[in-house]
Amino acid sequence: VLFVTQHNPFCSPSLNVTCRLLGSVPPGGFALLRWELYAETCVAPYTVCFATDFRDVFFQAPFLFPNQVGIDLMVFEEEGIVIGTNSYNKKWVRSCHGRDGTRRVGEEHVICSGTVLGSPRGFKWVNDYFNSIDTSCCSTGGCDQGHFNWMLYTTQWNTTGLTVQFVQNQEGIVNTLAHVKLKGYPIYNHDGSLSPVCHQWDRHKHLLITYVKQLVRDLKHNKSYHFPSLKQNFNTTPSLLHNSK
Image (cartoon, rainbow, N blue to C red; front, top):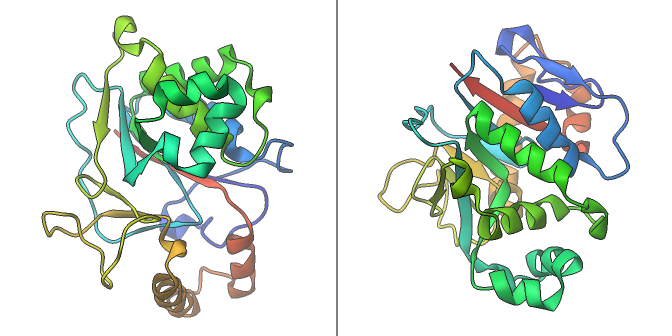
């Protein structure tokens, strides 16, 4: 399911993509709204869903969903950064929880809110948490990641029976690239296997050039696309929810 505010060339039956038109972008952007959309979409008969950003994500290889028995959320660390030393994440946490809050979680690894794998129960729990807190303390882009990290590191989710698995970068299905020193393309995990999901690829100029050229070639040879609409795809930031029964 692809959440969009306008026509998108990827909304095509031939690609098996269902698009949900949202209309105008809400005042706070998609950051907080997406958790409600995930919870609404990831329901039975689905047992596991993969929620991901769209604009800055590409897939290098198919992947099998990890065994989700007993796991409600699988979250992915960013490469080599902790909350207290990263200006963006520190700002998002401090704006709502002050300096004491920043010190409390400052040594914890940053968890990216742009790629999350979970069960319907897990996504509902996250959305319920967001609905239970005052989110007005932070209104800049990316604030939901501050709330998300605070939730993961300070709430007693384990007492509710919820299970969360933290995955190091380049160790699972997601490779979050913003702080990774890349040697070239394709992109690999630490064990030498191909990284199935590459997030934040547009932080690297050589990947931006390589991938956009390939995308243009693909679009030109696929009659189901409307090539002039390609520009719209890069001017919007919808989220993609990939479901697996």
